[in-house]
Amino acid sequence: MLSEFKDKIRYLREQKDLTQRQLAEVLGVSLRSYVSYENGTSYPKDSTIYQKLAEFYGVTTDFLINERDQFVADALDKYGYRGRIQAQRILNATEALCAGGSLSEEDEEAFYRHMAKIFERVKSLNRQRYGGVGGVQGSSTGSCSEAARASRPPDWGTRKHSPEFSTF
Image (cartoon, rainbow, N blue to C red):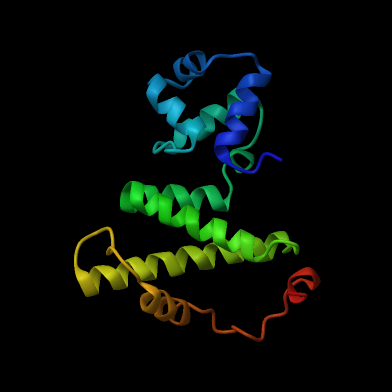
């Protein structure tokens, strides 16, 4: 299943039997930039790249980048490589936690938005507490708990979830 941006653009490029260099030229980016997109080590900073890809392949930009990709891309832009790695770890751990069940599309999008808020809150608390931009080394368990409580929606605990989710 093609769920990540990197997998989608690789698949689409291979279906057209193009090289990475050819597609980089079509997009007007360096080969190094395009390769990093396919490797998942960076995302296009210019939103027109997503539009060019969508038009070239005849797909929508929503198909190319989902909430998960956007969360990781935002973490990369704001906090650099370390932030991207942390965001990916959060998502991977959460997906492992929820393995075996499924969320409705609406609940999944709400979850990713909520995780992004928690991530931002933890980073902010760490900046306030320890200074700097990228957080701290070591454990931030207390900060994560504080951020999770602080960013809960008002209806936390009362919202009706999809039947698949409530079986956990």
